[in-house]
Length: 467
Image (tube, rainbow, N blue to C red):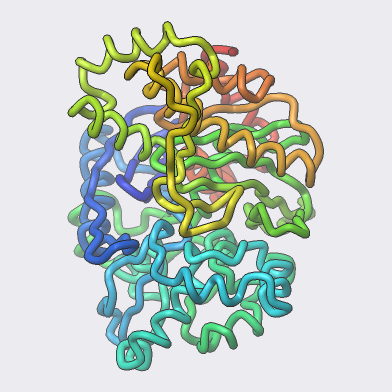
C-alpha cells in the first residue's frame, strides 16, 4: 500500500503517494489565496487551507483505489493562529511573509536578549517568526490575546481539527523562535518576551510521533480506514533536504518556489555570529542515531517575484503559452544583462539582509536595454540573491560542492543552468522531485519500521539532469 506525504505549503497543498522505494504513484494539488487586508499583512483563512488539504488527500485516495499505509505531514514554517479554549480561531493564519511585527523584531534584534534567543532557538530575529507575532498581538490586540488558549501553526490547527488534540513536531517548533532545538524544550526567555507560558503552546513530540483517535467523520470523508496511521512529520524546509537525499557534507539544496531557500544538513547546530542564517531541527537523536539539523537561509523573493514580473510586464502568468517567445528572446541577452541589475526585494527580505523594509529596484538602466534585458535581469537577480546566501553559508559551515535543485524553477532548464553558472557548481535535478512530501513519506516509513534509517534515500533519488 502507498505512503502519502501531505505537504501544506504557502500557496497550495500537495498530497503525493509513494511506494516503498520512494517512487511517485500520483499526486493532487489544491490552491488557496493569500489575503492582504492591510499593507504588509499576509494572511489565509485556516478553514480554507484545511479543506484544500483534506480534499487533496480524498482525491488522491480515490485515484489510487486503495487506502494508504500511512499519511505523514509536512508544512510551511512560521505561521501563527490564535485559538480560544474551544479551538476556534481568533485570527486568520498569519504567514511567514507578514510584516506587521517588524517594529518589535527591530527592537529585539541585536540586544542581549535577542542574541540569546537566536543562539538557543536558531531562528533569526525577524517578523516572519511566531515570537514577534505573538508579542505584536499582546501589544496591539490585548483582548484577543487574553482570550487565546493556544498559539498554533497551520499544521497544528489541522491536527486539532482531525484529532482534537494540540501537538506540534519538534522540527516545526524549532522554527518558531520559541524552542531550544538542543534541549528539545521551549526556551524560557523567549516565552517571557512573548508574554506566554509553555501551556499556551502545543505539546512537542518527535517527527516520528503517530497521531491517534482520528475523528470518524474525517475518516469517512477521506475514504480511509479509521486506524490509518498519521505521522506528524516535520517542517517543509527540513523535509526538502531529506527528500532530496542531501544528508552529507558538501551537498546543498536550492529550492525556488513562491519563496527561495538554500540549505545544508549538519549533525550539530551551526550558529552564525552575524545571525544571517537559520538553524532548524530536522530529526532529534533516535535509537542511537545522532540528531540532524538543517542550516541555511530563506528568501521572501523567489518565483513570486517572477510571477509579478510576468503579470505586470507581459500581462500573463509565467506558465502561459505566450511566455515562450518572451523567454526565447530573453535567452539571447548576454550574461550580466549588459550592466542591468535587479534587486528582487519586493517583499522585504529575510536572508541575507533580514530587513523587512527592503525594496526591489532595477539599476544601471541604459537606452539600449530592452524588455528581454529586464526579463533576464529578474531571473539573474533572484539567483544572485540566493548566491549571497550561499556565500554566508559557506563562510560559516564550509564549502559545498554540488546543489540539488527543486521547486517550480526547475521546470525552466535555462534558469537551472543559470544557477549552475552563478554558483559555479554542479546542479542536479531529479526524476522524482518529491521534495517535502517525499521527506514526510520517508519519516512515515521509518516511524512504521518499514525502513531502519535513511541510508537508502540516495538510491531513491534518480538524477534527471546534471547542469
